[in-house]
Amino acid sequence: MSVSRLHLQLFTPPSTTFHQHTPSHLSPPTISFPSIRFPLIRTSSTSQFTTTIPDNNGVPPSASTSPSDLGSIEVDAVTETELKENGFRSTRRTKLVCTVGPATCGFEQLEALAVGGMNVARINMCHGTREWHKTVIDRVRRLNHQKGFAVAIMMDTEGSEIHMGDLAGASSAKAEDGEIWTFSVRAFDSSLPPPERTINVNYEGFAEDVKVGDELLVDGGMVRFEVIEKIGPDVKCLCTDPGLLLPRANLTFWRNGSLVRERNAMLPTISSKDWLDIDFGIAEGVDFIAISFVKSAEVITHLKSYIAARSRDSDISVIAKIESIDSLKNLEEIIRASDGAMVARGDLGAQIPLEQVPAAQQRIVQVCRQMNKPVIVASQLLESMIEYPTPTRAEVADVSEAVRQRADALMLSGESAMGQFPDKALTVLRSVSLRIERWWREEKRYEAMQLPSVGSYFSEKISEEICNSAAKMANNLEVDALFVYTKTGHMASLLSRCRPDCPIFAFTTTPSVRRRLNLQWGLIPFRLSFSDDMESNLNKTFSLLKARNLIKSGDLVIAVSDMFQSIQVMNVP
Ligand SMILES: Nc1ncnc2c1ncn2[C@@H]1O[C@H](COP(=O)(O)OP(=O)(O)O)[C@@H](O)[C@H]1O
Ligand SMILES: C=C(OP(=O)(O)O)C(=O)O
Ligand SMILES: [K+]
Ligand SMILES: [Mg+2]
Image (cartoon, rainbow, N blue to C red; front, side, top):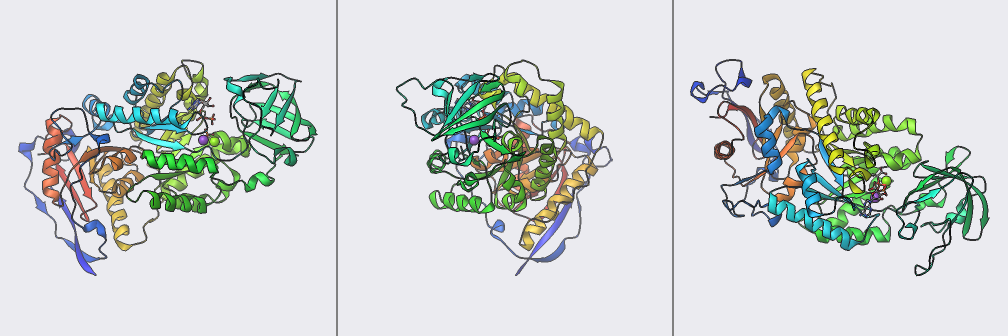
């Protein structure tokens, strides 16, 4: 066991008006506090930092910077503009995920989303072909490369729950009240037009598992049928609630008011098709893989070791989608095993009574925060904007609630994938997030959330305490920004977990870590090569940021790093 030092370096300005940007020539002499010594179990985090040459993905187009240019700092143009125009305090803290579909897959459309604040692009393997998704991935990459964005890519698996087939290429089909439709597990000859009012079902045991009298719900009740007859592989159903059937819509069946989970409860979480999609995701180097219908922690652990074995130096994060009764039952252990979670309210609302979804959302967001895992609130946030250019008041209230709960990210599904107003929907998410975040800060509504220790080693606990204290100091001293120098992103996520008042500038050496940090609340990720000398890192950062007018003399910052167990408070010289 060796000894390390915790030093609080306080470069205190002369007055208490820190936030009024004291000019540098008024800066007082340095006051050094005595070092506090205590034993520390050293981990690899104390090892020497090396300069990482970024991959193409993180390289901005500017001619003045090259991948090996150690004197460069990379941040996307939108963040840069936002910082310059509105100042630190007004940057958006809540991150935005957009599902890419036919409405947004073009390069210009993707660029418009990135300019509009998209932090993560989600591709849903339920729809489209792998080639289609590859084109989208390539375009996002090109966008990052050419325009300096760090948009991350999330691949979402199809999962093996029961769903309808493709509707033979039709974008939708209308089921009217009183009509009889056939749900069948038969494979139809794709060269022939499909039989009328017939829907293919992907689950082989379907005809055996349902009973006459069961209720069949499409997309959790958007359309409702009653099972009236079973003929071999065909199940005849009477439409009792008319509506629009969409391709690959989810199906659930209910008996005496309860969800039936017969053999379909035994379906594997990751189907063989999902494994091929996962191989595709690994080969493409996506940043996140979201797993649909997670039931237990084992599947996450298994997938994580699969990924680790396939791509030794890859850092693909695994996001557990909480959208089933089982996932709620095993919530804590699933989240502990995952790198993040999604409140997938679409399917969740088809599996539990709708009135229970808000409480489930709150619980999932809270557990993720306590376990220091990013959480995305998804589905139907602005559903009406698929068709209309303005949201309903109720939708705005729903978005506000997710922001108020301080979820890391909000997600658009159909609104951006196939809606008529993807950019407007994103603007609504952005402006509601900004407004609610500001309101929260103005009202000083600090929630008294207990943040339990999440690390297993003593050194990890020290890091947590440092971040908790730094965030608290940042609030009390009303500093302009927290700076964190982090190789893996862990220290940055610990600061994010505290949800401080000021933005967190996260400096990291690798483009992939920079992209992944884009999902976490309040983090502004920069790519920067840095050394193990904090003093020189700070000086370098100050001069690079000042040169780009991103900070100015007198700004008050608190800096932490995962190289040293220290908190430094200082004015920008
Ligand atoms: N890659 C794609 N190709 C075609 N349509 C898509 C694609 N991704 C999404 N969509 C459309 O957008 C809708 C909403 O997307 P999403 O919520 O991800 O899927 P789902 O509704 O199946 O859960 C889908 O129902 C589908 O109509
Ligand atoms: C996000 C969800 O999953 P998907 O869109 O893949 O069904 C959901 O069910 O809310
Ligand atoms: K999916
Ligand atoms: Mg779902």
